[in-house]
Length: 513
Image 1 (tube, rainbow, N blue to C red):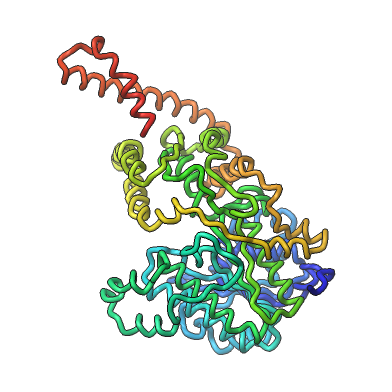
Image 2 (cartoon, one colour):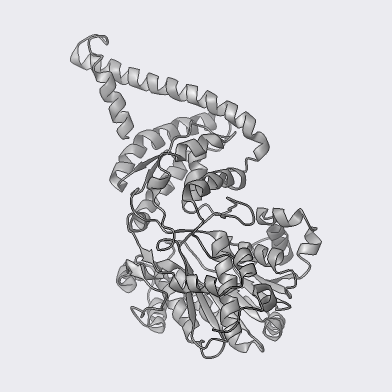
């Protein structure tokens, strides 16, 4: 193994970097880390997809306003931080990446490093859409890479779940279930309705269109391994930051941070999870460090075989919901929301069926009441729509909720050992010090600030409101139990006093829900 003495910052010094997916969770986090920790980087080119009514320059201004840069802006001005950042109009879903001839020439003549993180993560997207963005988008990136005059390394952001048909997966590329070009040809000749009907058969043992197309994208990268150093990094479920740029920072609503966002509002009160299963979650700052270190290693040793690294926790620092089950509601009350609409209380349920039954009482009925009040006061009701979307997605997510995967990360661990002591501090890949209960306290605060947009200065008012919501919560429970008690007494023809035995039964049933 070649020397690591040059260091991560030494390797990327003066190198021009091209990033796709820069407006996404991974891409913008990677950009922030480079700007903060590699001060002598070269020019950074961001592939930015045009949006209706917005110029590329406007989209770059939106990126600058991302909360991920707050720490950086405490030390430097926006102009200083972004002095070498350039937005390039393009789209991985278009031929030639949607680049103009001049922009393509600019990139091929200048870029030294490519980080490809653009993808569609929607499990519900059609096979045609995911093939175009995830598979063909990666192929288009490799075509650009082949034209680059002095490319040092190509790094692709994949997913540990490309191998979700295996319960145990190693840091290797597994064979494809079918030829990629054959799949592309099949999609082209089928009508949308025919494709929808054929999709389950075309997926084979893959659970959805995302995993199969990301699996195929890895093989596109592998085809280039003899041309220039190539890296594939496979994160599992990416969650908010552990340490950088600040503990709990996130802009993603996927996974636990999304649950906490809704739970803090009081509108998500139940979750279908198996508390004793290992769930593979990985903080975003560990993912970003893995991308940078893996790119450094492959470029430094000039590897001629694609290097694959798992940014995962299941075999290094496994997480089980049982570790935070008893504390999760306390976290929500430690950092309550001023905008909460119901008293927060989050409970885990062991099956989708049980969740659906419980949701009828603790999600849908309250949503009807609150949406009605919102409508009468001139607001926009959203809770029923939110819960419908959750229920509609459960079928696609059930496999991922109730399956335990183990992703080995031996190569990633070796990569950490290869680093200098200084790089181990600044570009850490090690999870041994990660304490999940403490992490979730930070994530709860992060979801409050960055997802619910409730700053720290409102905490005192929020805690006062939390106490009020608790009183209303108790009053509501008493009201509902009393109503059911009254109906029961009427049915059996006795007084409420004579039928008081039903009260603990009703309370017990409430606890089950």
